[in-house]
Length: 83
Image (cartoon, rainbow, N blue to C red; front, side):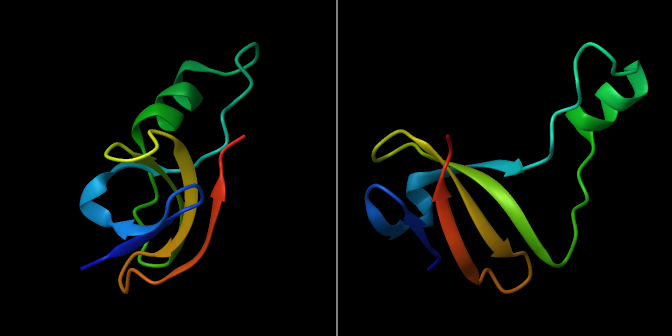
């Protein structure tokens, strides 16, 4: 069982959450090219490494938060609130 540390509710079973994907910096809308925008929307690194992800606590507080997780071991080193 994977436990995720919700910043508001504490550690909970991963079945309570929705994975929203890897956090990537949003390009500047005024100067972005169509290719850069497509890459931002559809492509992710999918690395076997430490990744910063966004999660949504659907069965709890209904808030988004960030988690730094290793994709092969599911080890979590930090969790934080999304501003």
